[in-house]
Image 1 (cartoon, rainbow over the protein chains, first blue to last red):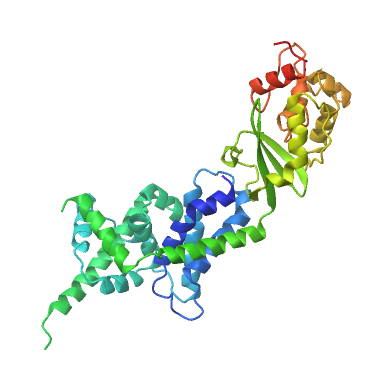
Image 2: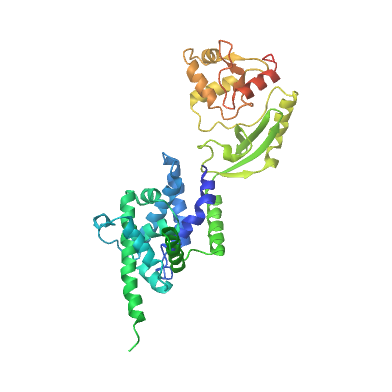
Length: 179
Length: 206
């Protein structure tokens, strides 16, 4: 595929991805905007394209570069990755994931949800955005995040668990009558 | 709610919490990216030519014809062709090429007089292609004969490979090189093209 076609085909989803990775520091002075990061992604890709040996997973390859750009920006703006996520507990099975999805699907307050997403460790956030919003398969997510599909699944599970933990607590508090 | 609809509902809520860009923002970013690409990419002009044997695409870099391919859309290109370049369709830049090719296909021209670019070719490939370019209209040589002409009599297989990488078929007449056994050998555009070109030149009976 010619690079020009790559731009036409994937620009929109890459911008959407980086946009959703960035909501918290978008307004900070000096922070790179999602448009800046999208531009950076394609500039890096353009330099690497001639050396790319296999052109089989171009979409995942672009997302991987975009992820690196986003992570560099997180680091630059002082957000650091938390502990090695591979060590975190994994889902106990599809039922546990389903239950999490179900309870989160009932969260009403989008501001609270946004703040909770902003507090996710970058890799967990990337896993959730890739999986639920940009609709990549676990196999594709794994190529993007350079890990195994099971680890992505674990990242997503952790992220959802964390969101539910924060939100049920907050929503619960908010429902308390003011004293 | 079933599992699927719960997942969709969750995606909907996540999307509301961290929404993506709107159409206007997408449009502006896309334009900026394309503007950058037009700035950095090498420009390759191209056009399409319908001939009575089928469609051709012509490509030009820096005023010189650099490639002819069989087909009618840049999507038909091989993976490595112009992968980093900006393709600009520009028929008005091919008036000379189109006239000469049309004359050739009409049977009123036997020799091309065009500026060609063989960039990226090895010395061996160039030698083979230049030798091939000297085979007159209506005549043929075998791969072994071309190999002998360039002083590499044992290299007929390599000659075949060099001809297979001919970027400017028809104009550089690699169709005039055939197997010494009398068979047609190979052709990048398919043997049907090779056969038609040789019949057109009277080098092969119908």
